[in-house]
Length: 599
Image (cartoon, rainbow, N blue to C red; front, side):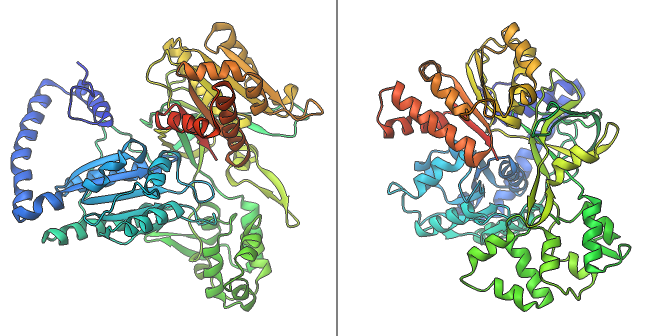
């Protein structure tokens, strides 16, 4: 017997967990569990509430967590925070910002915001409508609201944690009171996020007149894998194939990894995180520039001592410069030229210097570095994982995960540069090797629940990866909804990724329509948005019939152009004004009929 969301008090995620756990229990275990839950409900809840004065118990015990998440990090933190708060006796509601009715804001007393920043300081897709509401004239006064913001970002971007900063400032403007100061987290966010939550719980306890500290809840190993972002799985490489033909300007690798024994599961639309090592040749060059001893022992974190070379290969980021790193370097070395670069009013110069340079450039440009290896690594941040859209279905390929990775290589400032993870895969990864991986769920990028719903997929280059997983899943499940793929790349002969598979799916009906654009095969460059314009009448008809549109790939150019093209098509074929067409697409996004996985 399966639980259903409609007739239960549980969330969709809780129902999914229960439906996976309950069938595994024996009758004895079920009887014991029912007795335990009944007893703990009567004993623990009443004891917790008894600690509080009657007039403050309701105020202090109800907490709402809203998250804005593009890749899933903010969502994951929201769920973990809810578990911890519930373990401390709080009544917690967790919601994506896109699913929350903004008018209910004025009813809240304790609000926690966990939000990532996307692109150049923009809110993630599922936070756009909430962000717009807060900054509109319709936003209510919030004098009774107590709030705190956890902002996620990447300090290599100019507008670091901008969305979280926006929410924090606006809630204060509307009359809200900070429950706890905003925390701005870089890519290695686990420790600061835990510190923030502990502070929030302490502040909630103070408001209620009781002393509390964060109590962590254990994950049930029968339900979830023990492997995660903080405990990656060592996956064996099964295949590593260059998908591009001889003479191509590109190098795109199809990577197959074994997940056997990991317990990791994923759905089409999810991503796989890889923790890469830096190129050892680059590390050796850096150590030589600094005249360090590669065997010098350094402490990377408490209880973790390594050689300097090993730490720079496998723990610290050396390929990206950030303004915070420059500031720490200036403080460490006392270099006058670097301090002058960082002087107020030179923000554009700093931005220009950071672009396309790495740690070796910094070391060469602002020498000497009269510091120890330990002092040097103390200013570096941990190397972040790289996320790749999963290109396979678990139903079609049990115990495996496939990725589509384009090698990044370019020249800048007189040196050849390589993408850290993409060239690790392209140049230094062979079958039998091991990569540290984890699954990153992405609830914002999912196939429709109704398999009869038509889907439109736009994915040039490696952006086609999740659509391969979509097709494998639909073929495996026998879904009969129509599907339409727009694919583009440079040359038909060398760059038609997974060509044989798309043709097979066209023949067996899994894929209904395929439009391709190869930009370098003609004098006039043709891209996917041009093919969409050519098919505007039928494309709009699909939208009117309830099709879900998926975009995957480059955000700055392709996704922006495709977004504009969709509005053009809706305006033209729907005989609408520009404003009406924009509202049509915004409504599709609100209904999760317009989903983007862009980077």
